[in-house]
Image 1 (cartoon, rainbow, N blue to C red):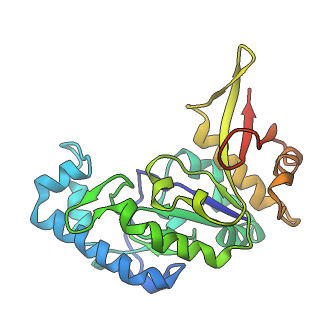
Image 2: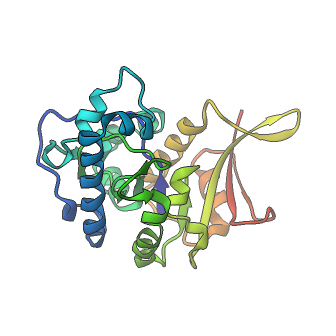
Length: 256
C-alpha cells in the first residue's frame, strides 16, 4: 500500500548536511526534470525577485525564502521528513515511531513535492518554497510539467493499492485517478445534524494519525480496496468505504 501525502508549506532549514543530489531521491529517472526545475527556480528568484515573490505568493516579511530558493543546488539537505513541518507531520510523528514502523513509513509513504515530484521520508532534500499551483516562467504549469513523468513513475508500483491523502494542486501534479490500478481517496468527515460534512480544522491531524497507525501495524496491509474500511476500523478509526459516489472509491474517516 502506498500513502500519497501532501508536503507542508512550512519547512525546516537544515544547518548542516549533504548537498542536493537528485539521483539520491526515489525514482531517479526523474533526476533530469528535478534538476531543470531546481535551476529554473534558482534563476527566477535570483534574477527576477519581485516577480518571483508574486509568483510564489510571498509576503513582505518572507524575502528570505527568495534567497533560500536562489541557492538550492548548494544548500544543505536533510531527510524530507525533517524538512516538512505542520499538523499532518506532527501527528504522523515519524521521529517517535519504532524502527520497524519507520522502515515501513520509508517504503509506503510518497510525499508529493512541487519541486521534486515525489520523495520518501528518508530522501535528502533542501528546504524550499514552491507550491503545486505556482508557475515558473521557464517551466510553465507544474501540473503539465510533472503529470506524465509522475504517473509513469507510480506505474512501476502498479500492483500496490494507493491511498491518496492529497488535495488541490498536489492532486493535479499526478492525477492518480487516471491510472489503471486500485486508487482510493481519503476524506475526513464529521456528522452535522445527521449529515456527513468535510472536516477543516482536524483534517490534517486525522490524516497524520491515520498514516501513523498504519505504519505501527505489524501485519500485512490489505491488497484490495474493499477491505480498507474494516482495516482502519480495526486500527481504531470510524471508517467507511464509499463506492457509490461517482469517481474513485473514497475512504471516509468520520470524527466526532
